[in-house]
Image 1: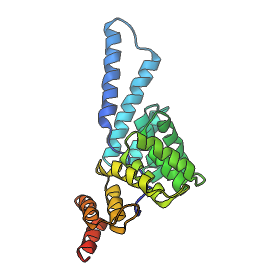
Image 2 (image 1 turned 180 degrees about the vertical axis):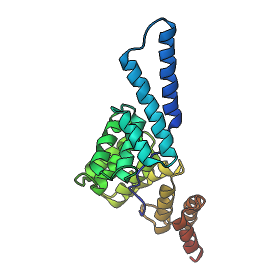
Image 3 (image 1 turned 60 degrees about the vertical axis):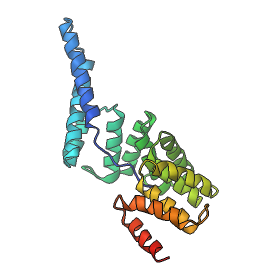
Image 4 (image 1 turned 90 degrees about the vertical axis):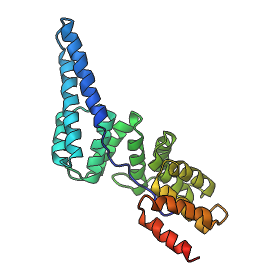
Length: 236
């Protein structure tokens, strides 16, 4: 298997953040119409949601330092998607100095709330030994949590561990199972990895037709290595 340990990138979740702002505004308005004054806790919640919305917008515009500043204003952050985003920013050094220990801290907060992307990225940290002692068992544990929730990146990463026997007995059948789950969701690395399994006969009967089928799916997404693999098969 060639491709593994891919982190889940922080993507836009502005609809969720904005929904929180709208919901909180609606709650505050309702209380005022009822003749009640807003409590300090409710005001704080509203401010946090507003800062998170501004942080989201700045991030999506590539203004990472500005986004990080808004996240600092929103502290303490309890929203899982925002916690994940902060972890990603620390891990990638976006708007702040790269700090794997801080990335782990924020990923753990989000992962504790069931955020699959954060769970996958914790797995990557443990697999690579970034900010933590390398630990394949913990990497597998976090990948499994995310993969069971349907996270395609974690499914591919888990398949890679089984295929290579990282910290466990090599198991091509399990690798194929997880690659197929990820590939069915369009995960390009898993599609390539399946193509390689069929091309080389790893845990399956060698089958150039099936290898070509999976490489074509990956190539259709612009994956250059898959294009090269198809050219290689054409010479067989």
